[in-house]
Image (cartoon, rainbow, N blue to C red; front, top):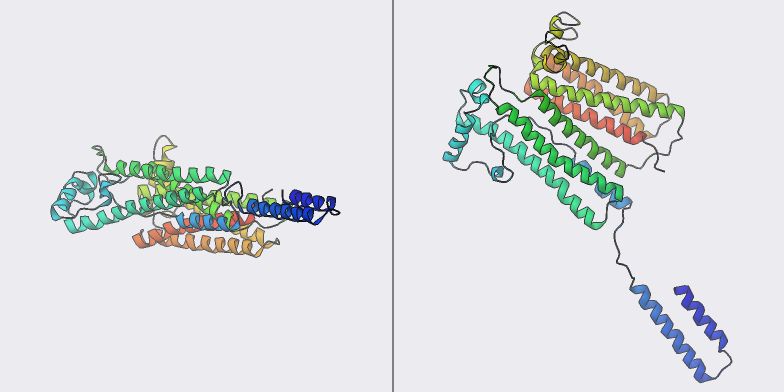
Length: 390
């Protein structure tokens, strides 16, 4: 439009160049008028300015997703009610605490495990569970509120909108799955006099969904913040990518198997390494019938499987590290693989120490956190080795 008006003004000036002063003045007035209209049109665009995804907005969204990654703690079964709003405020008076404690006394954890518990001790485990639930709500808000703001500002591409909706929906699912898990520890089981605990199946599902949410947030955040490397797709690089993906899957499976170890207290059945009670394969590894039941319900088999998966993960990570040393990779990718290998050996050392010392809570919690750290480095490696977008 600007060039068209300028061409019109120039054409008119050439056409009437030989005429008198009055016509010349009129021509100048027309040119000034055209220039004025051009200026007005340039200053008043027909469409409002809207923010579009770019490198800056990608970094902002990436930092947000990285900040949301992670919410794994250990809690008891002290809160026997679940209300989205009402329970946000813990008991205030002594009478309210006594009423809450009375409800707790009706459930198996108190009757079998904590029957000598005092009110101050109950308050301690109550606040542990209350803090976990409030933290879960805070994480949910940390996903949803910024997502709504970024969506309105136009920071998301079409594909990113689908990913964000999936993440926010998974947050709600994770909360519901958490209560479903806790509920299993509150149910009466007259046939069992064992220490009450949540179902290992539900614990595994809850942990697995948390890890999926964590990995998805971490992967999306890293791919937004870290530009992909320009690497030629050689045969060795393609092999390295496949190797890294397989190793990441094995790490995830090993972390998931830890839920069955925790759910069955399987870390307490054989506290020796590398053998189990002076045997490489214990006698009661297939004590349950049918045989498939042993994988998920026999503490001996569950511990044995976790050992094998842990050693397998360490072997795979070591192989990945040695394979990558023979290739020309970007510096950032080499650092990620090196840290993954270092964390793998640290995690195995933590696991063996936890086993030999009969599962002390601080060390067991550190080992559990180590599995998340190991998974984090694995996702980072995959992000560094990803292909350039077309």
